[in-house]
Length: 345
Image 1 (cartoon, rainbow, N blue to C red):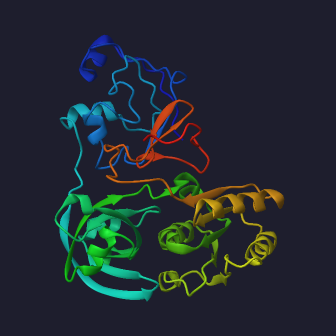
Image 2: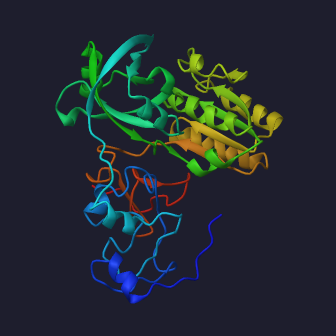
């Protein structure tokens, strides 16, 4: 745990950090503390910081006082030392190693990537932007099913629905890829911090792609993991979750599906649950856990709109308690900063 330092900057010190030369003081209670998924990474400071819209640093946003939640990295200092920004994610052509049609318009792609990028995409919530044509407007976010740094390979899955995914289906040997990104789930802190507990993953629809990276992290931290597949057909991610021995197959489209889920929750009594599915599934899971007197510790797949992935375009912005939140960049837990004023048009 980090503790707040008693050190106070001298005027000379603060002048070396802020463009205005004003003394930076801590005023943590004045503004909401939002956490950025990229803070402290190779990609920080990002485009938002360069534009004066940093999610974390109030001084970069133009305030005279610092109200960040100190985590060991000063984005303001990095912004000065790195001349405005960290590394930039750029689209590059990558090789399609293989592709497999798993039915219902869904296809799995095995993609060649550099070892470093593959290792960065093993985190829970990892995703990339891919496109089948040179024009950037075709970028679409796809969750990483699994990454193999030693083989310089990642696995992606998508369903053919509109122009973006149809162009992917038409590609033969190459696609354009941009990444890594990590904010594909809600509840990173829960998933990454739980140790030695019983955890259940409920995976359905295309959101099942989140499962393998989450299971890998949970198993590495000594947790006992069980998986409930809530799909009608055979789950296409099952071959990438063979390290999890306990698996249950329940069709959530049937009226009896949630009765079976409730019975398993009562039997296993998990410490926490990951819900990979739609908002209705997340809500029903929370209700059932509450009814069973289980603490509703839940992480979920993300259903927010996303376009650029950098917080620049504004497609992901939602407003909660009068605060604009760029959901593609802000680390959130399920229900945290839930929108009560609608989304930005």
